[in-house]
Amino acid sequence: MSPKGTPTLRPAANFNAAEDGAALRAAMKGFGTNEQAIIDILTARTNAQRQEIARFFTTEYGRDLIEDLKSELGGHFEDVIVALVRTPEDYLCKQLHKAMEGAGTNEHTLIEILCSRSNSEVQDLVTAYERLYDRPLAEHMCGETSGHFRRLLTLIVTGVRSEDGGVDPGRAREQAEQLWSAGEGKLGTDEEVFNRILAHESFEQLRLIFEEYKNVSGRTIQQAIRDELSGDLKEAIGTIVECVQNPAAYFAERLHKAIAGAGTDDETMIRIIVSRSEVDLGDIKQEYERLYEKTLESAVKGECSGDYKRTLLALIGGP
Image: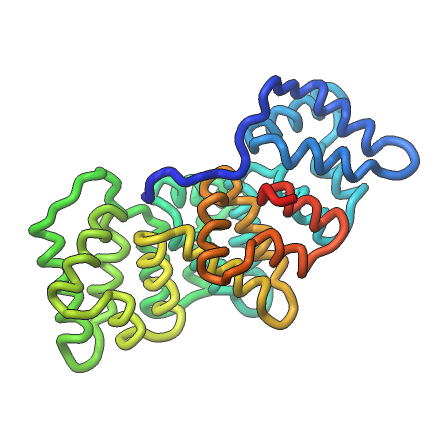
């Protein structure tokens, strides 16, 4: 996928799962809860370190760390802390499941999670989803989506994307011409061609195809997508393009929409900050400031309060 980004969270030095586990137990035992101790520990450890703490908790106390945290905390503070303690795959699968369960489907969440990740990352989610829900992700998704959008997501979930790391400039030129012929070069749009190329090719090859598209068409691939596609498919293909070219800018835009709209989309804000903290949240912060001329920290401060705000700011690396 993209080159390794700048995380805001790195492994804690001199890490001791037993000490952390005992400190968390003490923070939750007896009358009242020491929320600051919980924040200080869990926002300064990587997910792998948190999993060690959770295992110690079970072995030493015979207790489930997540269940104990849930019984002590509430609201969005509980949501972000529990998100930190789940494995990344389980957390994102729960988000996918929530997006599809009940009346209506949250297509934005499906697109954000599935169209922004590499083939191997998606396959980890596919495995975890079946373990958690005893049904294939593709099957659940097919019941909740339709048309060309469903076809694109199915291709992504079934793992057809190449990850060999090689690029073929000659083929990139041919594929750019195919995209032009399927869209701007004809009346109507052949969505299947867009799906096939954008779901099958590696992010490295796609980067080359998009550069060639400018030579073929005289316009950017984004302009073509804006004019030729519509609805959920347009958003999904656009997400792949953005994540090929600048994933940090894509997530910065998603955060801005979550924060700046009427009311705050806390679920999206938590998901991006938690899931990108060990990947590229440092880059996302920079892009946020470049795009919106304010820091991500100040935007979060304006929308959240209390322990919830302190937790998010600790993950972002803000004051």
